[in-house]
Amino acid sequence: MDPLPSMWRTELWHPLLVHFPIALLLVGTALRLVGELRRRWSPSSFLVPGGRLLLVLGTLGAWAAVYTGTWADAAVARSLCDPTVVEAHETWGYRVGYLFSAGLLVDGVLWLRRSGAWVRRGLLTVFVLVLLGGSTGLGYVGHLGAKLVYQQAAAVHQPGADCADFE
Image (cartoon, rainbow, N blue to C red):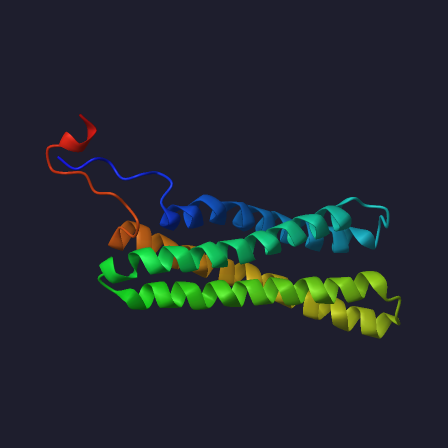
């Protein structure tokens, strides 16, 4: 009988960390967009700074998830039946990180620079498109991650048929 594997294996840091940036980025995007819509009627809304903070924390968390994903890839890639899924998951993870990072740069320009209405409207349009694209990409990355876990059992310990591992 083999002992149960440790819960602190390096490939398990990725699923441990990845769920925080997902929540932070999606809620931050919603707050930031609703805050921009409300800004027209109520300029002192807390939604814009709150959304901005969540986007910053979520983007940092997304890059931590990408980093720990490389650990997981090194540990599980050889055991997967279809390694193209993990490659697509990694590629889209980087794209989401870059999109939200670019969104933060545009948001920083919007926050720091007081420019004309046309420039602000153009930057705001780019910002909204980047956030929506990042959120869509985030959903696709999650879908690919779910395929890895639920279809290929990536980093999942499978007990024996008689469950003797747990005795």
